[in-house]
Length: 634
Ligand code: FEO
Ligand code: CA
Ligand code: CA
Image 1 (cartoon, rainbow, N blue to C red):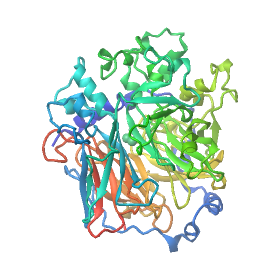
Image 2 (cartoon, helix red, strand yellow):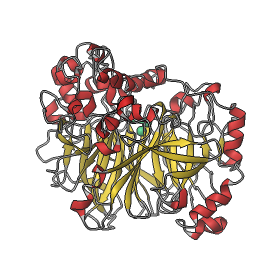
Image 3 (spheres, rainbow, N blue to C red):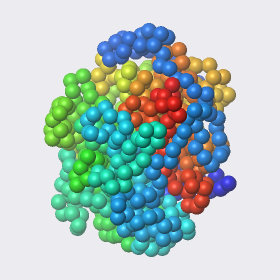
Image 4 (cartoon, rainbow, N blue to C red):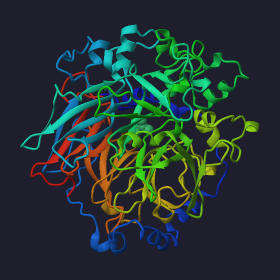
């Protein structure tokens, strides 16, 4: 078995450049841990308020609770160190598409040890993360055919090429890595036996890579900080990088999120200290010297001393239309620039489109975007412009269980020229800096955010933050040295996702249930599965929350996994493990087919011999189904 610590360090090195090992800014001191935990867990007026709020948006199930508890029925699997995907009895986990699988009729077969950029650009990319299922024909509730959009977050040159090229990667290695980033569109179909297959000759199949032309749209497009020698217009970028999680729009496109983009760039220290870009690059963690990957040796655009604006062209939410293989992905600047984990789309009471997104770094913030115009069913061309105009907000969680969304609008509050902001474009290009001045709550690495389709409540996943000291705890981040992470529950005022006020409370304090500082929404801890480092989440049609993890090997000592818990009814908080991933992986996705009978999830950075029993291990998407065709989890 590979050494777990070694495997984990490899993930830290290539995924986020050891972001967790770096010192972070300190939030102001707060009440004691015991105080805030007590307040967060026992807020007496919350239930009364939540019941009132959900009257407008929830099914009666929430009010009746017990009678309408969402059914979850399987024998939980146990934490595992086995190098395989484990699912409950009666279920089968099929490997659907692997790193290197040819996606086109003319794509060459995967040849380990002989990776080439031209081949990789025609094959499934590396380190699959977000998975979106889009039914075919588009817009229908079909469950048996569809397009999968899959993110390819980052590359690990040591595992890809069998040696460590740090210091002097070859041009071919770098170009192969660029081709292994981005995303894939693959058409998939379900056979009569319930198994899925990839249609290699499907006209929709596509690779988006670190070299694919993307347009920059919205308020920041064309700003001088987005202009480069290659693109004097500030509107055309080569590629998208570090695409972590994402979201699906109501009009059939996907949002793919650029997360740890900073680690691809080098030499921010070459800019003059009084250059305003120096401060912004520092706030985003652009390395002052060499990059961890050394891509700058072969591609000057990654060298800030050569191209000081290229980092501004990354860190965005990118909209892709999988139904049109010739469409140009668009970086939507109105949604802000930060280390976007995901982007979850919902509709407000008035029809505005709302996008929730977390900035996944220690002591960073939770955001939402509210479109100016309304979603119009059937008017695709109009809907494709919705993410270019609107208001970006950042969240402040008050200790009394209320909260506020603070607008990031040029000219309002401190976002003025006297404070260094000269336009809405600058507010967006330096979203982190603009948010700092509004005093939002510094979170324990906000990852995925999802809205419950049954109750409308919004769930914010904070994966962990071991750097929070006892003096730094606050009500929404109530544990110091938070190794295991937690999940918050938000109820927007009036049940309206466009509201600027909300109520919130802690839903889960993850960890080994035997530990005193864990909490599972008050559910008896003898009946829950251990869970740590929650990351990507999804809801099934019944409103149960599915939680994938990233980091359990370092905390619980077991492989990452997938869990499900009801969020209302008598089993609220009863976390049950549904799947264990193989050695070294994190579990990503998860995504259901429209009929709920298939669960897709991505197995990222496996380090053993999964899935084929040989080397190299291959990040892959699996399709999980019940042998009798049941809805997954029931
Ligand atoms: Fe790429 Fe925040 O996980
Ligand atoms: Ca993630
Ligand atoms: Ca993660």
